[in-house]
Image (cartoon, rainbow, N blue to C red):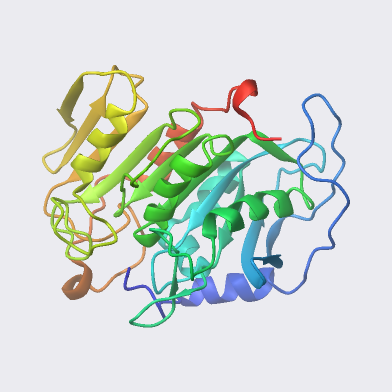
Length: 317
């Protein structure tokens, strides 16, 4: 749960009503092979799409940057919303569309379909066999987006909040040959029986006063552990890199495994709740806990992503 269901600021409503007016027409092809020329014209802006996955019609928003020229492959960020929320709310919460526009990134924001007890939908993580296979859906989503735009298959990144962070964590295990790096806000976990094809770089953010997914653990069974325990479990799957921490401000501490270029990072936010750090939305403090404006999780995450691309040998065909 992220408490965002029904939060639709006027500016967001106007923007979406303009951008979702038309549907793009699919073109032949998929992810362009290395060295091949791509030619897939697509107007910039936000377009709603539907794809068939697991006998369900699955929805997603595709946000194409202004600088897209129809031939240059785009790095791509997947944006997974929290439980009970939706893709529109996730884009508003994170400010990801505007930040991606500045950097020339494609954004794909899909909608979950598994029922959430308090209303809305959530991602099927940990996976339950009777619910939709969201890992399979993400695989199909990447391929579907590549029908419309030139997509850089070496630079596909997963980001998410709360339940969306849990899905991003799952993808770090199951789609390590497709996802170059992941960013998790308010919901990093280390899935059981995780055997990634390669070590996936991770940047996470979590408030110590989170009432939904408690920082030390002991919350919902679907998380299973605290956020620092999760990060340590990811580290233990790699070489035994040293753990360090650095106070960035009075309330923000950076925990890392490795050196200054470490690929396992956690931003711990003291006395901060279940929020996206740096969001411009006003959220219900009584339900989600205190806000934080000291750091901008979206910009930090995108800077982190820029450092990573899949090695050629690791890319799924």
